[in-house]
Length: 127
Image 1 (cartoon, rainbow, N blue to C red):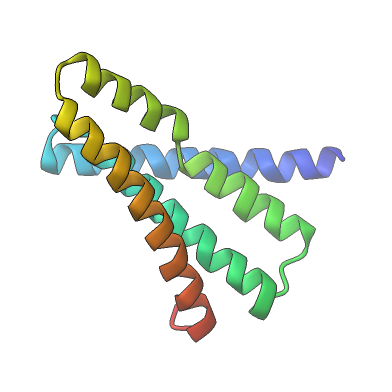
Image 2: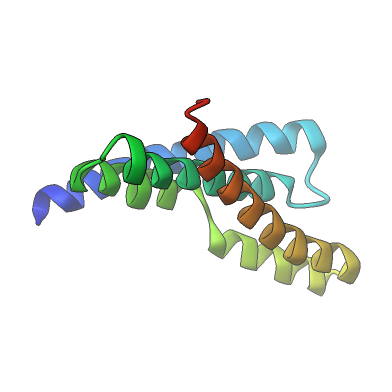
């Protein structure tokens, strides 16, 4: 059991660092008036987990260790539902109702579309 925890912890650490790096780059480029960084990170995470899930099931036959490290660990540390919730509430509190609604709908649509795209790419073995 300890080995499994270490795999998840290591993957989470790498995913968290990747999340901060990607979001910071996006916020530097596009500003912070809208949560573009979190939207991009969560979309990329959904794509990546869709790809991994398909590869794990159909191509790579990832074992338990690989799934724990990549899917639970890296993807779990990379994506951030709690930040999405916080940023949504902050948009509503600041009176930015329309951007908040766009963020909620856009995040859900992007997440599902990215997962499906990742899964599709995994089946085609393009990546």
